[in-house]
Length: 81
Image 1 (cartoon, helix red, strand yellow):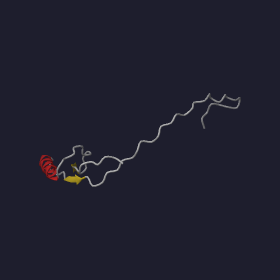
Image 2 (cartoon, one colour):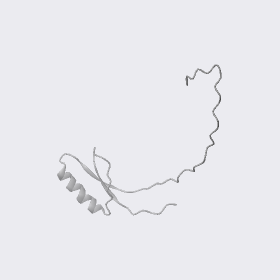
Image 3 (tube, helix red, strand yellow):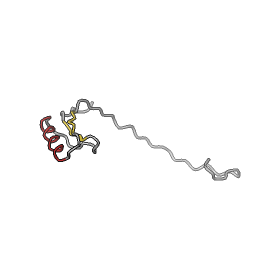
Image 4 (cartoon, helix red, strand yellow):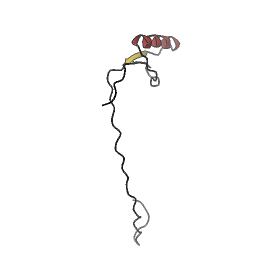
């Protein structure tokens, strides 16, 4: 099982790029949303809260043997289909 992560908040401008900054408090994210809204009239900014987190284990890596190529036959026209 993975280590727990601390809850965080992000600010997303609808129709804008993905949020990147993790705010450590809801109040901090709300202040940032208000600042961004004033700087970008007409864009709605939403405060998002982390409510669930999921992670997956890395898949196993295995080696695959490379064999010699199959020799060409007289009927092989080298067209791949």
